Image (tube, rainbow, N blue to C red; front, side, top):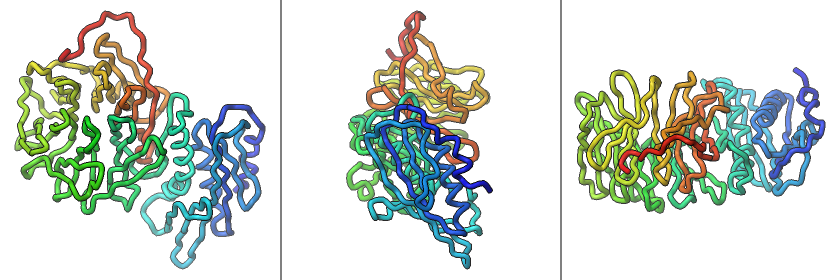
Length: 419
């Protein structure tokens, strides 16, 4: 195997490109860990976010410098080391920052998980640190990848005050938990719930609570909990023995969700006082999913004749088609002003995120430059960002952001459903 320095020597020519945050990383090796260290270094280089400067040393020798030079606003100094236990055939890796161990992980050749996944876990810490700095300081262009851990990171939801992004991750002990990304501080905090896995976290309109799908009682139910002291105040919203899922808020006091029935499933609403109501639709669907609401209109995914489309139940009680093409549409999300619908669609041969102007009926793809499946869009509180999950190859999904810029149109303006 060629030394990393030789493989990467072509990158050492300086090119002047704008960068704002720098990583100085020193990696220490032994005979047993040299290949692993080289693999982690290559992973760092290949995944480095745009606008991040990297200076990489192996055993105090510079082996890589980013191909651009500029003044950095922030430097992070990190040390990475690995030990190997030949008896257990086990690697123990750790990141050190300011003389403190900030992350550690391990891998045994006897494990079932791929070696490549361990390499991703080893490299994620500085990548996320730099990416979150770019996010916090608004120093990125159109796209920004937020998470790099090999765990599942998906189902994003912005708080209405713009402070937090909630999503699901299994990076803590392999159990799927709600994570809160502090958008102001650039810090991720996982909120574990003992004995449960969680999906679909959704902030209430007042930002005080999160609705979610969880398995706290042994099967899927819908719950609500406050942000503060969350684990002591979890409220069961759904009822019965049939699985309930896909929660979202109708208003500050009411949660929409889907629950299985004996023959299919149905939309339900429930107040925080747990007054539950089945929502009868005037149009027959084989199944329904993913309700979301805006000013009394409930948008949802409907399955009819093996075709998934997006529909709206208006305040007047009628169902109208919002988007139903030859392809499948999923994951509806409405912009804060109610004008734009974001959704996932497989019209390109894989799933991409699209936006439809509900007034002009124009639609366009916002992830066409990302050649991987993308799902679960969510608008930020001000409508300027859309978060979504990207499924890259055989890896679990990661959270990405894209700046949202509406496409101008000369098409005739038509009212959105319910307006």
